[in-house]
Length: 317
Length: 241
Image 1 (cartoon, chains in turn brown, yellow):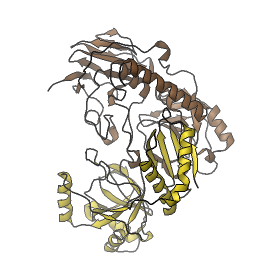
Image 2 (spheres, one colour):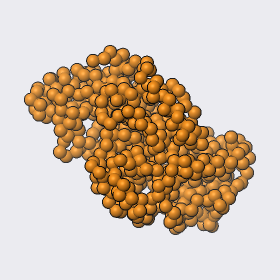
Image 3 (spheres, helix red, strand yellow):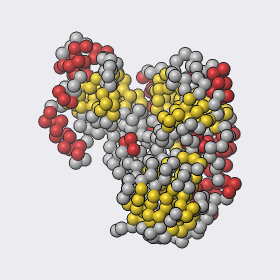
């Protein structure tokens, strides 16, 4: 059976296969991984008629060059890395047909960092612990547990129904690298910091350093002083948790984070803002704003409704 | 102590104490067991640690207030719960030699000979307080202070999978090849983490580990069985101190 749909002509920078991650094993210390911008991947999947959790190709700043080995439908959602089909600019956040022999490439990165190429049927790689997500450190998921390389062949699962081409309404397209503040919920180690220090964190501007990857983002800005110590007895870390080690400079934990850690946690970025954090390049600046759980959950539910409505439109229930 | 607070907008954390102790960790285990049994709608998974349980949930299905109420109702029942028995998982270890380059140092440091270190190390059942750090890594408690040894001054760049080590008064097993500063005293052929295995992670918080010394030929035989997937770790019921 040869149903390869894509041949990798150029690997690009850290291109990998990702779905929504390896959930359910965190109590065993298993890293979750998954798309750095889960909203973009899910929209891409829904636009090509896939389930939300199907695996897609995550491109990072410098996208890959891919050749299609058969006719299919794709969508590109996430960062604007200037996607082109056979050298011609193509729109994002909408699905379109591609023909056997056509090639997809990327040009100048314009806005954001992570973009997703969703392919009808979803990219089919072996499922490891319930997920196809690549986790390079442990060498699992995706293609042999590594970033894509030249000459890799990617397969897709069969598509049963005819796909209707669709687009995401303009008003729902996220704006990356905006000046909007990153919203957080304080805690769980709020008490490790004085009120004044929390103010410093919430009013300061933090620059994203080069020590940034799928695991997390180290920031540099006004020092966040601890009341006494920076260490806690090992405890959980969530997606978007902001740790403050002894040097007083925050670290935001992202998709490839460890499940537990020993540094104080001043706050956690709300779920709908995690992608807005991840879509920033080193050198970018972040500011934080406290909101309530109720407000954050209202935003989460609003986003979830959008995805569910898109799924209904795609007749995926 | 039973303190509930939000952990971001998709998490809730229940703090059950402030220190590393068997009593507090037993509460962590009780709450985890409840979550496993109760199957609360919207709860996706949870992470038990030394003194807290953090729960991931889907706010579209259950809001913070709703889940908080449900978790609060568990507090009283926590005391009365009958926990399922804990197990002791026997981990075969070859001590010293190439597999345990620091065994001699651990012995000298503590004024013991190497056999005494092995005897002490294999004489306790170690409680798995929590899992974390890397996939399948157990945070163990209960090592005798008689073999406690500070970490290496210069961490090694590569510690082979299965290495058994001592760091201060902690002992542990490396599930993956990583850099590290532990005093390596032996190695097990058993894989704590094997993603393609039916049960990818061997250990679970709340159970115990017992190290069992094996000879080189026994080690090789177990290694062979691990490779063809026929090895089963010996597991016995935990019978207390």
